[in-house]
Image (cartoon, helix red, strand yellow):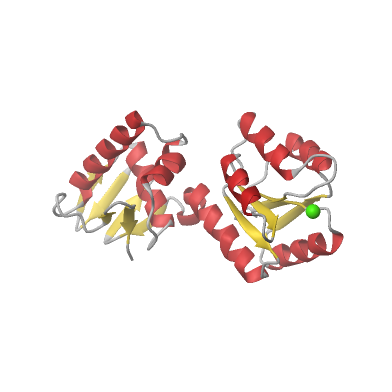
Length: 230
Ligand code: CA
């Protein structure tokens, strides 16, 4: 049985909160609510969530304060911020504080759903693609750390498996090196990080690409990052 994705909705406006919960439950998520910053802080201290929808303008403790505090404490849960229109500065501050994405009110629920799915794919590729999946023309077995291609079995490392899983969960999108490093290594990019990542990508390409000098699976997008096309 697949466990449901549980989303914490932190929103003080009752109408929006109720609409969000109805919508999320309709789409198969479990929703838990917090009506102000203090309640959100307490609930997050008590249990785990797969995603937090965090309104910025909240009574008692603001969304920014919560986000900063949670990240300082090492909370890894993806956070999607709900910001009011025209508050560009808040959005930027929110991302600097460790939010994964933001959406501007008023938003359509379809747009919200797309953002939620995108954040979940990015932050939890393992859940998005599972342990066994197709990657280009290969069959990937994450648990066994093996990739099967044209009858050949290729062994991969855990890190290579995480890279493949990430690209498989995020096809047809340019992935910046910063993003890849953040999501696969769980660290902020540094010079050393750049070299580490380049080495891992080169090694992985030598295993899975026909010609690693002209990669066709994990493509390089000049000046922008990488892309896996399906
Ligand atoms: Ca509010």
